[in-house]
Length: 449
Image 1 (cartoon, rainbow, N blue to C red):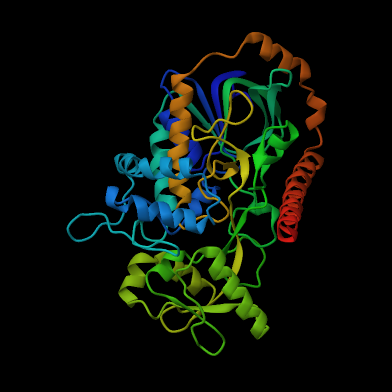
Image 2 (image 1 turned 180 degrees about the vertical axis):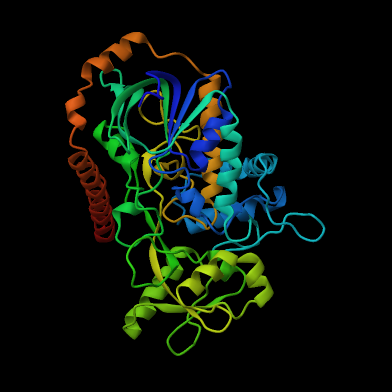
């Protein structure tokens, strides 16, 4: 791991849109290390199909706010939701300057689509691979920065911290290919490690996304919250094959596709929030004794399907389905993590100098259930705010803090990586179970009263 220095100003763990946007918005005089566990394309951001929400002027504020709160069962933080909405147009403008080519109408204006839970069309998109377009646009800009070292295939094993002061000062890293270990110190560490889909048998996430950031936070007593708030996407393509499930974007239903049962009859309102549609699908599957329901895209004009959803058409064809002549089988699958490391609207956690952004954090925006296409926006808004906060209040870490962290570092603790990550997996799933039981206990107590 010779390419990595012993000390950086900022370490960013995760190269999805959150991590990339942190790097882009840090001061250019700061030495930054940006890491990815696997390739730079292995992030949930890259997989996002549907699009990114944006507030369409002040007249849309109340409706957008209400849609987000209603989808989240009003367990959202009003402050965080307000912050996200107020910065959405700014983020869209940033992306356009970074070269992201959002779809436009004949007059050159943004084209907007609609998804479940939205009262109007307010979602910017690029075909059915918006996340890929945004990720590549940001990555291109990051690679131009001389102050940022980008390193894929580098695994976060732990953070370095002064337990006495509850202060972070670096990270324990491993080369994914050689296994070489290195302790790297920094004035600030930003966790953008993504979701927890790799812990589930059926998920739309990459298998490498195993909640490492949350596990490490639990290990060091960093506050987490709502880790049992795990979103199931209503429509993933049914397959008997193992591995990551292919998502059928909610935009398909937003454009008019309908869900039908074995008799070919429509059985629900497809534009309700995801948890409601998921419940309706599961109820129908149970009543039929079936392994899937069907999504019919023939209700959308064929030219519209080809233009807006080329990747979905292609993948379905690879699985043997012709979306223009038959409905496709779909089933709910784990998709998104609304809980995580507790952070504020600047990405700050309960540990000094440790920030968390993106899917690995819980800043209150999503509440109990995420509104469709709010994820990319949320990640980008609060990543930028975290970077600006670090830049505005930047102070070098005290050398005594580093010395105490060095004294506490034991390389032998990380020799058995398999056992280490098994413990991390157990910690996250155990916390999910604990949170579920605590919530059920509180609910039962409330009902008795």
